[in-house]
Length: 193
Image (cartoon, rainbow, N blue to C red; front, side, top):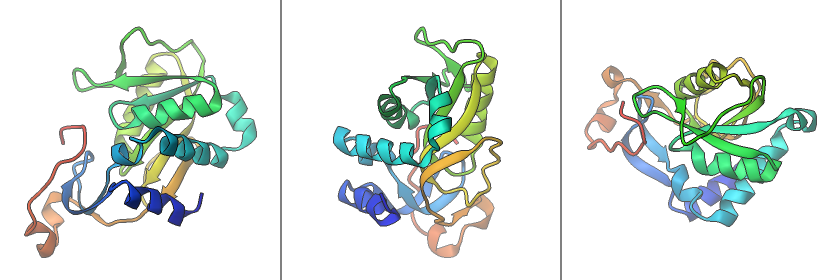
């Protein structure tokens, strides 16, 4: 799947939005990729998961014991990655602000984990999820996502396999361009920022 193929999937599902968005990272952007919309079609979600899986080297895929994703955004693509890899897929939640396993989910001590996200912007949520996996006894051996908007500044210490890298500019609250500041803010993400 080429970058243009991926963007076509986003456009076809109405998932490439323009406006003024406050991202889960707390940064602002004139563009938002609503992965929930692109993943709402199971066949499309499966295609995207298979395309991500093809980016992960075969030997590394063979080491994965379980797929873990953070709620909310990572659940669908994490589940589809589990299906593609024929591994269980579980998710982390933030009931009190910090990621934790719930619903009877557990990670075997020493289990090799593929952490899967929908969109990575700063990498903060992913790094917090990696810590939660380590606290639960697992070892994140690789990270994957549908979209990488980090510009390479994610801070991961494991191999990272995004399906597409997009560098829409993002801005801190105090550095908003006038044109963006004039547009009403939409907060589409799942986390309070």
